[in-house]
View 1: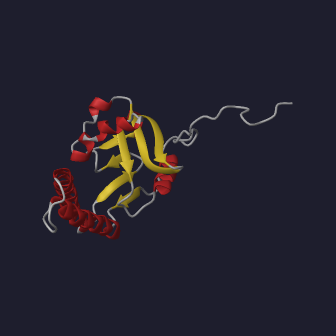
View 2: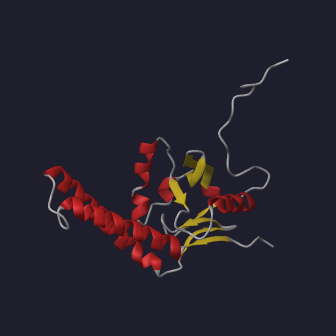
View 3: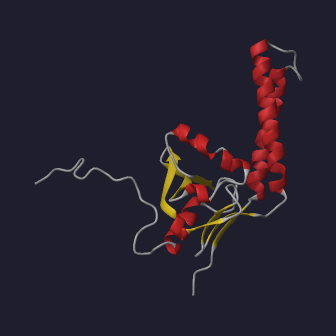
Length: 185
């Protein structure tokens, strides 16, 4: 009997907090743009309008997720499904490597490296922007984040270890230099 699948759904309170944050930035941006207060200069107005447009669209884009409980990530015996990437489940045999990425010592994303990435093209807007993540110096075919979900990334990593080949760990840490900081005898 195979273990039950790992499912991460939208978290309404985290999405509501993100929308509130967007509204705060929209308010500040409207001050800069000269809508609420008199304009303070052309550069500030441009920054204000850019912020107003970006955070306005981001907040509006999050509204449908506030009222839904859609599956964002599903890890099962069939493979890994990420709604932000596509509607297809990526089978385990197509995943050549799984790693993690984060900042300040905190893991924030699961990175999937596919053996044939052309077989799984993105079908959602977030998938099309994934190639821009190479600007961070990390190349991966699919980035999966859990910030606005009801589950944590360490639970997902445990599920990956559970469903992938148990003889070999699924997540490979960065190799350390042998003997670094040790005194050889």
